[in-house]
Image 1 (cartoon, rainbow, N blue to C red):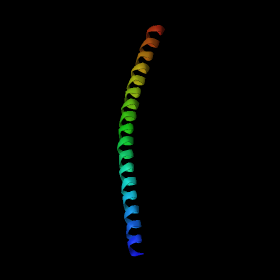
Image 2 (cartoon, one colour):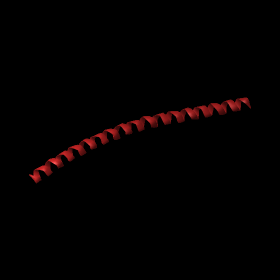
Image 3 (cartoon, rainbow, N blue to C red):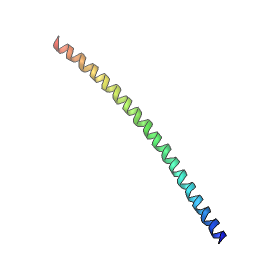
Length: 64
């Protein structure tokens, strides 16, 4: 009976270690996604600022 419990606990330990590894890989993947989305958002904000400046410039040209 003790041997069965030991092998059951060893199995549960191995399964838990596999889950931890999978979760760690997910964290790495998601951190990469966050970095890419952050860069994309920063670029979009920069383009938006440039477009707003261009719009103001064009509106000034139209009114003069």
